[in-house]
Length: 197
Image (tube, rainbow, N blue to C red; front, side, top):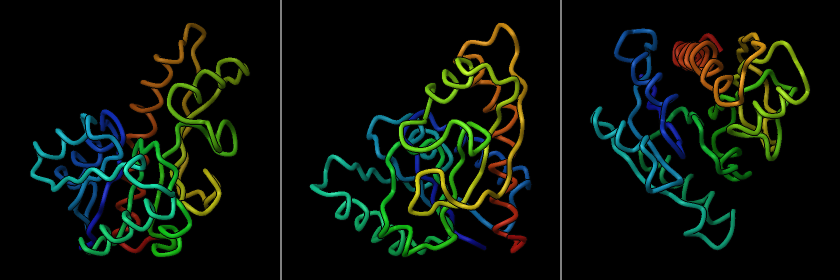
């Protein structure tokens, strides 16, 4: 049984999808044992507490350097015997120290079909705004391994979502979450927990 830490910064909708998938048996071979937030006011912390999951706030602004922040994350993960780290709406970019300590054991969900609309600065509504500005007809979500390059790790799963003529960034964001992120993130976690990847 793998111990999973989910790193969050906001509302925790992807965290909820993971919790629901564990409860319903869509994720086997792993359990969420810790939720770490970069934001002390993240609603995701409430979701974790409601489900009896231990929480911690490790905020970048409490550390003088990215290295010190990264070391704090590494120490917490080791202390909690974490096997798999899932970035689910985590708005802090993790550093080299964490990536090197957990090679191929950190995954991220990104709200586009990588390599489109990804990299530094592409998060939240910005991704959907850019997709609509560009005029693409299909977008989606990607689950990938995390390496030293932002959104540059090996792709695990992708799912396409069609763009509708009257989409706003907010409407598109919601559809990408519901139709893609909430499906492929739990599936990727289950595959890793069961040694399929």
